Length: 183
Figure 1 (cartoon, rainbow, N blue to C red):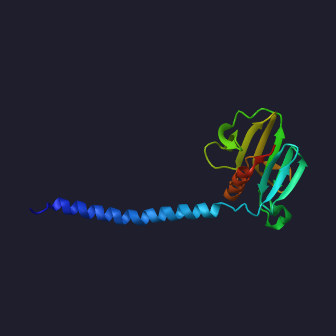
Figure 2 (tube, helix red, strand yellow):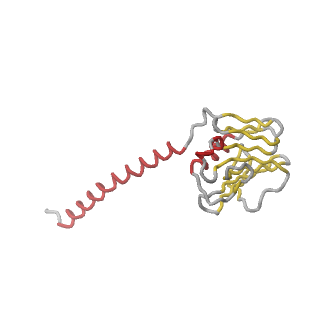
C-alpha cells in the first residue's frame, strides 16, 4: 500500500529540524565549554594568607598585594595600583572585615563557607553588579568579605560604583572558595 503524501512532508520537515538543531547544539555546547575554561583563573600559583588571630586562611592571586591594617581588617589590592598609567577609573579590590556586629538584614542565606551558613548580596539585587558581598558568623565574630572598587586612592572604596568587572567577580568567588578555618 503506498504511503500518503503527508508522510513524506512530515519526514522532510523532521530531517530539516534535525539538520538545524545539530549545529545549534554544537554551538551552544562549545560556547558553554569555552566560557567555563576562560572565566576560571587557576589558583595553583596563588599565595595563601593565614590569619592566626581569627584562625583562617584564604588564597589570593600571587600578583595582588596584601595590606593587613590589623588582623580584623585585611585588604587584597589589585596589582594595577603599582602602575598609575594603566589605571583607569575604579579598580577592584577585595576586603575582609571582622567585627562583632549582627549579619546585615539585606543579605539572604544562600551560601556555605567551610560548612558555615553564609549570606550573600549582589547590588542591585538579582543581577550582576558592581557590588558583591558575603557575611557569616563564626563564634562571636561577623566576617564580611566585599568586592569593592577603588578610585586609586586606597580607602576611597565604592561598594556600588556602577562598574561590573567579570574577572574581578571570578577572583572574588575563587578566593571565597579557598577560605578555610583552622582549629
